Amino acid sequence: MEVLRHFSHVHPLVFNDERNHESGEVFCCACGELVSGPRFSCMECEFHLDKNCAEAPVEMDHPFHRKHNLMLTASSPYVEVNPICGFCNKKCEKFIYYCSCNLFFHIKCAFLSYKILEKKFRELVRRDALVSFECQPQELERVQCFACQKSLLQSDYISHDSRFYLHKKCFELPLEINHLSHRCHSLFLQFNSDHLPCKICFETQNRGLFYCCSICKFSLHIECVSPPPIVEEPSSHEHPFTRWLRASPFNCDACGTLGNYVSYICSTCNLMVHKECISLPRIIKNVWHEHPISHKYFVIDNECKTQD
Ligand SMILES: [Zn+2]
Ligand SMILES: [Zn+2]
Ligand SMILES: [Zn+2]
Ligand SMILES: [Zn+2]
Ligand SMILES: [Zn+2]
Ligand SMILES: [Zn+2]
Ligand SMILES: [Zn+2]
Ligand SMILES: [Zn+2]
Image (tube, rainbow, N blue to C red):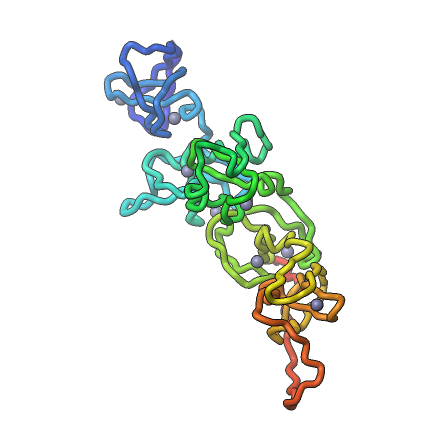
């Protein structure tokens, strides 16, 4: 008789690999799901763990959070509220992996993320948006890609258990990149646990994944790392704009403020603008400016600070 001493229960748990257990339907106390396969049980307390949950490591070195290990616990460290899972956005009520950086994951969601990292396509179900009968467009509007937090409409995506969604393009993202905006270190695909704003668009995205250098606290949105190469906005400008990556800042011809790293140019009109300024009502470069033009100096903080 195989017996397991598990941190979550006072009594030893007994292994049982019968498919049709005589006690009928039982639910795993760690993940909450119906147990259909092998399990570890304390019959006296009706406490059951499926084999995967029972053997889950107490510490997990998670590639999306390289700073610290995630710890497995049977209940939330915060008594007052149920934490929200960083993958599926649902409440965590049973076992969780957590880090004091305010990151929480269902035990199943933490494992799921490994399948994503290992690019296990087959174990994740892939469907084509708008072709699937199970997921209607209205439903797709509600859900977001867990990585980039953008809508899944009109894109190929992966879904799992109807609670986890990921664009196919986000599934294929490299875990480590070199980017011209931060040449001194690699950027890693990470949870934005420090709530850093994106260095290109200055917006903060609290959920999902970012490309980060944790040494310099430098982070970029997934979308800002590889923005669309050509943007057409016929209602505001008659020519298409082409992306032009730059190592130095530029002055936007539409709004007049400074831009970083990613500019869009119309070579016909000799314009250089922010991505978000392409959709401004009308972009006109005013060569013959009738008002006096004042000069401003911008101080750019674009150095890489190294850690002591
Ligand atoms: Zn379980
Ligand atoms: Zn017991
Ligand atoms: Zn979850
Ligand atoms: Zn942490
Ligand atoms: Zn995405
Ligand atoms: Zn951004
Ligand atoms: Zn750095
Ligand atoms: Zn033009």
